[in-house]
Length: 343
Ligand code: CP3
Image (tube, rainbow, N blue to C red):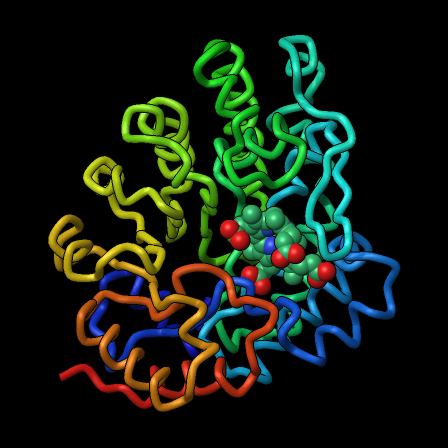
């Protein structure tokens, strides 16, 4: 499919471009009043996620309002555990809660996986189809999934946590159980992402949000192994792997062929360039809190970031936009990237 703005696709394919593409993680989130207006009409977050027409509308808002170079489908990583049979709730101002969590081998046996689980996510595929139609090829559409380990973390812990010690206990105390769950998750994610691509996603991002709580050995055994399987299964589409806090595993992550790598702000761009090499597409990585400072400082930080990454770079933050961020700060970030020219 030819696209009016294919800067992101070209960058992911290693083609030479004049400036880096820019998009933001959580760009469809709570910072836009236009998003909040739609969100407030619905009983809760999940009602928006499961409504393809409205999910498509809030997916496209940042393209129209912020002029980003990509759309990311409005959804959540927790729709996957739910499709496998583990119901979640999104509690206002608190975050996700799983009333029932994974405790035993029996709990894992009862979960659906692969196509059987992916069959329960028609509302996501429908949202992608509606978005693709309404976007009219203006910019590429990004689909995403949580990485298996990050989804395991929520399914075992039942909610967000500073330490995820219940989830990590499983890795140390019941490794066979952990692997059984990770295998089911991996099969499901592969079916799910293939269908997302069929429904209109032209790029896939994997979010391993809790990678930073592991160490190099655990990361290799319980996360990277499965991420590799997913990347292998998605050879036909560009993939971006974002493993937040996994700087200790950079050299291992660098052995995944072809994929682009999203970096958090704690990773030094020059160090990442050295480890991943000049040809690897890197994404990131301004501290989202930088957008809470003055505009001239944001613009300078963008210039510094772009020059330290050099070519083969996707401009982004090092994590999602925080809800207290002013729209004007996000616009300054995007505008500065768009007025940049590679030397
Ligand atoms: O980036 C986008 O704009 C696309 C939409 C998107 C959401 N969640 C919408 C959302 C994406 C890509 C996600 C991914 C996601 N969800 C991740 C991985 C990225 C990351 O942040 O590391 C994680 C860990 C989740 C789980 C999740 N969803 C949490 C922990 C929370 C609550 C935290 C909070 O900020 O309140 C959510 C809720 C959520 N997902 C919101 C949005 C816009 C806020 C809910 C609301 O609008 O009321």
